[in-house]
Image 1: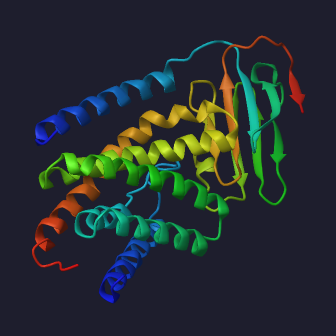
Image 2: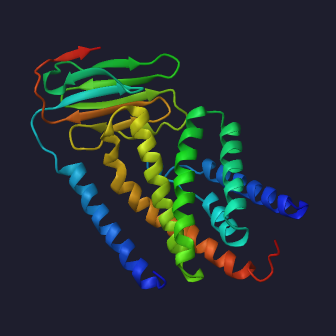
Image 3: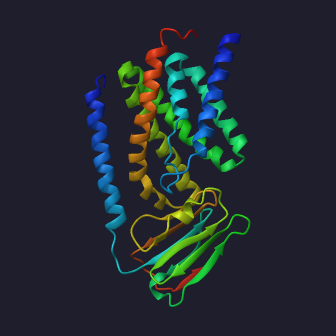
Length: 125
Length: 166
C-alpha cells in the first residue's frame, strides 16, 4: 500500500464500477408497474399507483416542515418544500428507475417500485 | 495539556469551522445531499500528521459540535457525527500503513467512509434502504473531492512538517 500505483488503480476501479452501477440503477429498471411510496420520518404514508392517476393532484406532507408533491400519470415530483437547501425540488420528477426523491431535512423519501403484489390505487396510513 | 498545544488545537478547530461554513455558502453542483468539497477534512488530515491521534479527535469533535450549534439543526449533528467519526476511524487505521506521499489516498478513503456513514444514517432515519441507490454517485463524488482535499493536505503537510512545532 506504500506506493501510489496501488491506490490509483484501486480508485480507478472504484470509479468505473460506480459509474456502471449508477447507470444501471438509473436506467436499468423498466417494469410497467409504477407504485410510488412516500415515507416520512420512517413511516410509509402513501402508496400510489402512478399508472392509475387520471388527473394530476398535489399532496402536502408535513405542516411546518412540509413538502408539496405533484402526482401525475406515470410521474411524481416535489414542487415546493420548506427545507433550506431545496435539493428535493431540484431533483425533478421520477418515473421509474432506482433513484428516489429525498428531502433529508424533512425526512421525506419517495421511491417508485416497478413490481408490486397489491393492486390498490391509493392507500394512506 | 500545555497552553501552546491547546492554542494550536483551537486554531485548527477555528480554521476547520471557517472552511466548513465557507463551503456551505457555495451553490451545490448537483441536488444530491452529501456531494460537497469537504474542505474541513484538510484540517483533520493535517492535524493527524502534525498533532497525532488524540488531539485530532478533539479537534474533530469540537468542530462538529460547534458547526451543528451554529447551523441550528439537530439532524445535521447526527449526520456530521456519523460521517466524521467513520472518516476519522478509517483514516486513523490507514495512515500508519502508508507514506507521506499517499496522504491523497488516505483523504479519498476518509471521504468514502464519510459518505458511507452519512448514507447509512440517512437510511436509518428514513426507514427504508432505498436511499442506498445514491451510493455510486456518492462514491464518485468522494473520490473526486477526496483527491482535491487530499492533494491540498499533502502539500501543506510536506511544506510545514519541518517548521511546525507542536
